[in-house]
Length: 425
Image 1 (tube, rainbow, N blue to C red):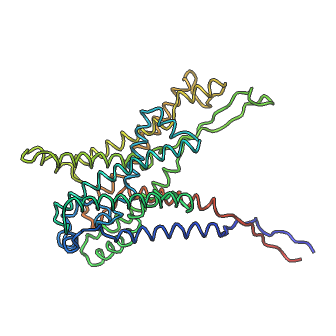
Image 2 (image 1 turned 60 degrees about the vertical axis):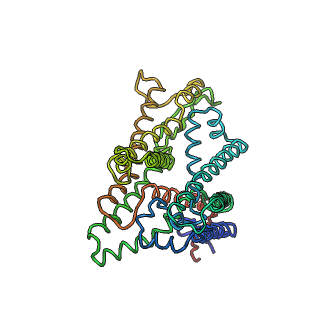
Image 3 (image 1 turned 180 degrees about the vertical axis):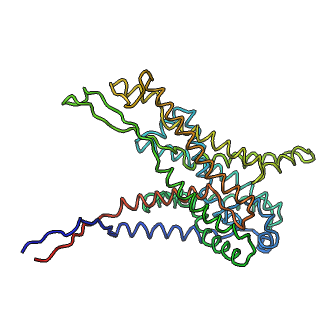
């Protein structure tokens, strides 16, 4: 009796105990994060908080868009201080050779030292912001017993919540299925998405919202998600031919230089929004009674033309900065050209460095346009459509990047078994 496969082998994923443990661990940390969002800071007047969030919701805008911060939770900051510190250190590495070496080094000690700098910066930022929040809560009459003890407990509580979340995020990275810091950073947006979609559908069904708003939001969500996946996977491939002397048979070996379209990811939008927030805060702290201060504060509010123009300009600036820092053309040309290598397809008479600079410039401006659209289009729709919830381009970008990272790691973790169909005799 002879047997033979009747079809091509089909590779099917199989779930191992290790993958199951990683998934359960990640879900467990997310449950802890969600429960912590409902734990208020000590010393908060619950009646005043309820009135602020239900009777006067517009007056709670100073607490921010973060759900945990609106609840004045111990997890109010989330991992945002860590993300901001990471962005600032990446920016500083463009000017500091020592930080750049630590960031780009392949050695574990250098990476640990760079991450330690990020943690220290995150704690400093969290402590400063926690003290400012304590003062603001006292001014808003939301504190049962204002004074030094409340301020100290607020700083300690918010700082402890941030430290715990940073540690949990690092544990997810080591024992879970994706980058834990970015997962927790996007968790708030992901958790609110089902309720926001259900609320939008209900308002559309009761005719309390313009009929075109719900389809427009759905189409925008799908289009932006597809655009993010497309552009984050996009890369420019340049054929590079090594020197013939590098091969024993004397035949030059060809390889590919892969240049990613987006080298900043979330760094440029986060840094742009952070600087806008700092600028608005400084303008609000200026002496009262000056007419230009009130006009500046009003012009810098979300949705205003000046805010949108500055936001777009800062995104483009920081995107180009990170793109320039991601690839050192002169060093690469010196290494490859010095070894006798060459780039294929260069027009005659054009230097290799000038050709690569031209390619990188076109890629950078296309990437800057993409990232600006991702972050600005939701702002415009929210402003002019008066939708009942805020769809942030930055939040969507983080959520999609986290999902892509989780899928990629999940595919690596899952072993694949081969099944064949056997014919009869």
